[in-house]
Amino acid sequence: MNRGGTNMSNINKIMNKINDVLKSFSGISLSIMLIITFSQVVMRYVFSKPFAWAEEVTLALLIWFGYLAISMVVQEDGHMAIEFLYNLLGQKARLIFDLIKHLLMIGFSILMTKYGIEMTKNAYGKLLPASQWSRSILYIPITIAGVLITLFSLLHLISLFIKSEE
Image (tube, rainbow, N blue to C red; front, top):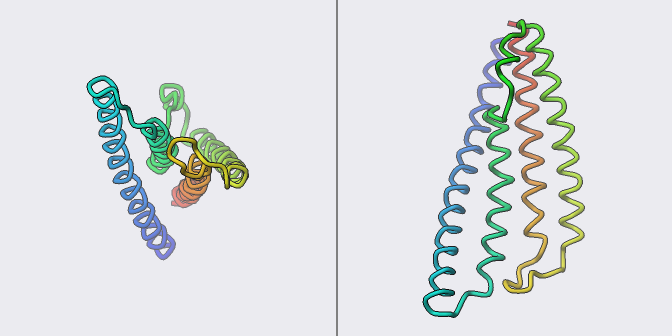
């Protein structure tokens, strides 16, 4: 039992490191979006020479930021919930609801991964008009987030079983 707890602790450390990388990426991408958007406004309204690529790059960063932020929230088990009703439930009912929640998240994230891969493949070879980046760059984060959400939800599910045995 203790060995399982130690293994789970090591896995949680790895997942926390992944989450730290995601947070760093999110901070950097937000900063880059801010700089690009500010520069775009200045170039458009002050110099009347806007960057043709600015909106596409900002959109791509926003998509990456959004999907990776979703996976961070899942890792922290911080998604929206009606906690008032949840807190009224007994411990066994909470366990059942948590089990259902994580199973649904796993199912959804597997579908997200599957269709993210399909959309990425379909967009491969097509270019964004202004930046000339591959259109697939807009769909890759769906797959990455799907995989991360699956992993994080599985860990939450495992920890539910470990807690229920204690």
